[in-house]
Image 1: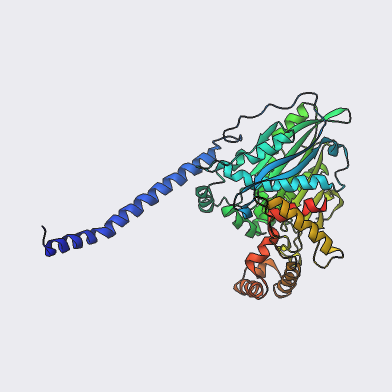
Image 2: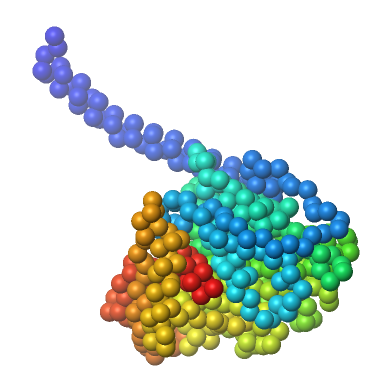
Length: 455
């Protein structure tokens, strides 16, 4: 048996080596992590993985004759706020919508877009290693008659390692989105309907919300856009462009429908506004000097519409309310602080028409809120148990108070970025806001439940 002195000597020797061992382990881990990130970066740079969803072959394009149908069904999805538990939501699609004036608000289409905006988040799990997350978006759009669905943009944008990589490579302005196409019969001809559903803030993409206008934006003539959303919008338009060309080559007119929630709503708003500018011959965006003029390739017979939810302000353009943007509908919850940011007092707005959900001080709110609570309970309830409404409508007053006080005390975005501006905003938020409580008004499930209640 070894003596205590011998054992003590061995322990001291081992302890001396511990820092060296830890250093070796840490160095090895960092090198391995760096290697993984570099491989991941090279995969994304080369576009490896294509544009098709994992485990699902690309579906054939629609029949040459097109179809015309109305579909009422239910689709499965998950909400972050329900812990990933799968639920079902009613959804409707009617090909006849696209023979109508898309500048007229269509609540059925708005409800469908609210669901698609939520599916844009749920799809992320399908692209995460070690999960069995279904391809919710493909399944839903397939049930609505879309025979071509692409969600490849989620690949390399849905893992933790991807979000870390985005920070190091300054790629937080990227975005994940689904693009789908179906061919319908329309007034004796055929029309390709292309739907784009944009995922909202995810991981490092939150940083993109803070990338407002800067000197580069002004130099490139983009003072009307929120620069953090422009790159994402440009990528989507680039993805849609070949589909538009293929549709035109088949003799189809094209209808582009864009939707999204939160940051996804802001990007969708920009995509639709740029498409409207293109149709009006007014496009002057960042890629306007490219060989294709930076345009999607829309023609005079094509049409555009967008339904956004909880979108923050994405432009300082004085023309944001111009008539050509009347086909963009922005649904906002007065008890949700995100659509109030960046402040209107700093010149920010959304393109198109803002439409507010019922607010606590509106006439008849009690009855509307009761319908919402019933809708939410049916939507999110588990095992026969009704779910309580997660947000407080009274927060609409809190949002208004915060917006007014910050607008009075911080005069511009430039002032916001100063230490004094940051301190002022923090002081106002601490004085007025329960962070967890006020975020509930931003939930996707709240917007979907309100839309179904108002139907």
